[in-house]
Structures are given as C-alpha cells and as structure tokens.
Image 1 (cartoon, rainbow, N blue to C red):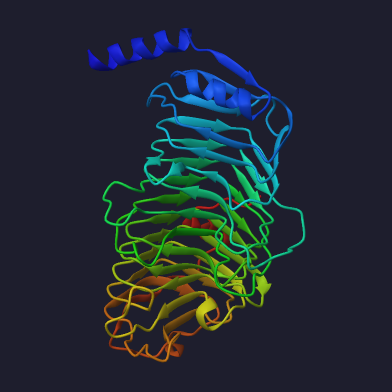
Image 2 (cartoon, helix red, strand yellow):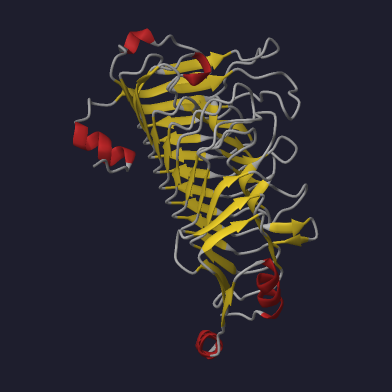
Length: 401
C-alpha cells in the first residue's frame, strides 16, 4: 500500500504545481521563499549578470522543486553569478554560466549548516572563453557537498584559473556524505595551469581521504583536459570510474589518496601526445580491469599504467604504499611506457608495491621477458591472446564513432 499512497500523493502535488517566471534576483528570491514540491522556478531568457541565487526550500524524492531556464541554453549567468542550494531534492536544468568570474558557479550548499541532499544538475553548462588573467586565483565550476547528488548531461570547458573544475567535499568524519553519480558529461579543453590545482575532477581531499565517498563517475568524455598531471584526482575511498573516454588528455586518472577504488572499462586515447597518460595508483585494494589504453606517449608518472612507490608512515598528503592492487584484462596498445612498477615520486618513497596481481593483460609493443620479476608483482596469464579491434572496443566498454 505504501508505494501506491506515495504515488497518489506525488500525483496530487504535481496537479497543483505552480510555475514562477522570474526576471531578476528579487523575483527569484520571492519565488524560492514560497516554492513547494513540484513547483518550477523558471529563469527568463537573457543575461543574468552577477546574479547570486540561493534556494533553501525542499522538494521531495518523488516531486522535486525545479530551477530551469525558460529556454535551455538561453539563460546566460555571467560575471560573479552563483547558484547556491541548501535544500533537499532540487532539480536544476538548462542553465549556462558563461565566462564566470566568481569563486563558485554552482555549489550544493549555502553554508556549512545548510547543505544539499539528493539534488540533480542536468543539461547545464559552465564555460569560459576568456584568456587567463590570474592563474593564482582559485575558483570552481561545481562544488558538491552533502549526499546523493547526480550531475549528468552537462558541459564544462575552458577553465583557466586554479582549482578543480568539479570537486567533491566531504565533511570530516561524516559517514553519509558522497554517494554521488557523475555521468554522461563532457569535460572540454583546459589549458595547462603550470602547478598543482588544475584537476578536472577531484573527489575528496587529503584530510578526508580515508572516508568512503562511494561515488560513481561513468560515461563521461574528457577531451584535452590538460590542467595538470592529474586529470582526475581521487582522494577518497570506494569510488568507481567506469566507461569514460579520455581524448588526448595530458595527465592521468590518479588514485592519489584513499583505498578500494575500481577503474574499469575506460578508454584512454592519446594520439601519441607527449604528456598523455593513463592510470596512476597509490594506496590499497584498487582494481584496474578491462581498460583500453592506446598511443599514450607520457612517461614516468604519466605512463600508461603507473604504480607509485610508497613512503614509510606516510603523512595524509604523501604517498601510501600500493598494496593488493589487481590489474586484469587491460589492453595497452603502442604506449611509450606501458607499465611502470614502483615509480619514485618522492625521495622518501622507498616502499615498492606489494601483492599486486596482474591477470590476462595485453601489451602490444612489449615482449613478456621485458617485464622483470619482482616479489611484489604476481603474474597470472601474463598476456592474453592479441585482441582484434572489435574485441578491444567491447572489452573497453566504449563505442567510438
């Protein structure tokens, strides 16, 4: 009976839903104050300059409150515009933040006491076409706080300032934060920053890196996201990265901090770019399975697959020893450094990877004897039979047109 009652309530609410067409911040604030589950706050087409929009009113899991553009793509939020949501179950659709100058474009909180839950950001864009004027300035296109958000079918490109394009923040000690899904987005070109802090996605930070975030990052495209060596910087536990495509990315998917992550069925296509890399591992219990890596000319920490050396009693921001990693059914085609085991990224890093199992991987330009034996690396079925092109695509789980 309960599901039927919930459905009836949702239908009843939707029948009485209101639509508020808002023309400026004042009318947005008025609509936000009285919005109910099922209502839509519709931003009028045109430029919204330096618009600071805040929403505190809750929807429900079945009937969210919607904030949307009157016409998708024709609401341009410019300058120091920001959308801050400190509510439950809000759907944001069709907004375009163009050439943002503020610290945040979209943040799923208002302050530390007002954090969002269960929101969805869909069919939105944050783009910058202006040249870099101050690379010391730190900004973010999208900051995720709270739990159970979804970011999908969005477009992010052109970031020139320091700071991740998309970042997940975990409250210290929280067991509920995270559990987000980031899927079917396009992350477009980002120029080299010249220092740390140019990640396209960062999940967590050093202080919260041993907390479970349990996020899923899947079916996204990353094209020329060259901000720094870490295109994706994983700094939390239990995340899954699957079926993403990396096109000419001068960096890597880096499991920088945290344990128990899974990297599966992703495609890394370097087109012989000198700095293009693949997957880099630090920490424990990671699974790297069914990935396709082709024509990556990066070396050292930007190798196709790189397992880093660890620091004894490593501080949170150091290099933890790689333990119990599993490399399975990965296809590495024509890469300059197909597999680098125990790369030393710090003078204090003296611990080689431990208990790494490699099963059924294929390296196109390496003979089996080229990989020296190491007590920390256990080979099982060292090389699978050479795959056909169709087999490789199916194994990577990615479709190329």
